[in-house]
Structure formats: C-alpha cells, structure tokens
Length: 155
Image (tube, rainbow, N blue to C red):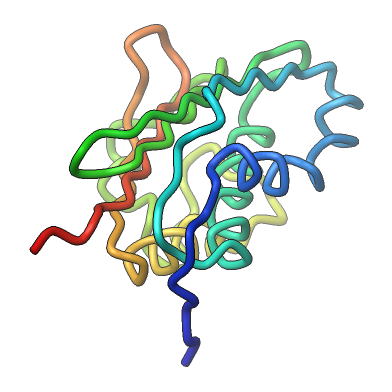
C-alpha cells in the first residue's frame, strides 16, 4: 500500500518532470512536445506519484506517435477540477481496445512487443487514489486523446 501526500501540485512543474525522462526517445524519433499551460494550474495530490502517472501516459503517446509526430498537452482549471489533456498524432486506438486500456496486463492491438500492459493501469490507480479520473478516446483530429481530471474537495 502507498500513502499519497496531499499537497499543492503545480501542473507546469508536474508536466516538466513527467516529460523529462522522455526527452531523448522523443529527440531520436524527431517528435515534438508542446505544452500549453498558464503556469497557475494546481491540484492537491502527490507530486512524485502524479509524475509517474502522467509520465506513463506520455510514454504511451511517445510509443504510438510516428517519427516526426507531435504530442500536445493542455492544462486548465475550473471550480470543480484541474484537467490535463494529452493528444498525440499517432494512429489512435482500435475501438475494441478502448474499454480495456486501463486494465492491468491488457495489451492492445498495436502494443509494442516488449509491453507488459501495466503503465496505463498504474496511471489510473494513482490518479483515482488522488480523487481523479482518467479516460482515453480517439481524438477528433485523429490520434489518441487522454483526459485526466483531479477533482477539488467540495464541502
């Protein structure tokens, strides 16, 4: 069992930390990462574990985005939640895979041979433990679309 911290997490800092280990693989593939945030978005959570969760989603995008492709991240905040949306320019998901993407050990049709199917499952577990949700769909412009929301506590 893991005890999650409950402290203010700056989303810009979170995204920088989550993307850092992927910089070299992205450079080797000629991929571009564009992060759109005003720097003020925050949520209450655990920076270390949130970095792991968002990093796993970004890693999935890197693996499924072609050479020269683009990954875009948008952060926003409302009165109810802080949201991180991640889009890639890959092929998207097979329709039959979408309901199972966050299941432990599930490997989709387009999974890499060395994938064991735990990255997205871990991401979902970590996000859910911090009063959050994560979903995935095929983007309107093509590619994959992930939506992560960390809900605020309302009294």
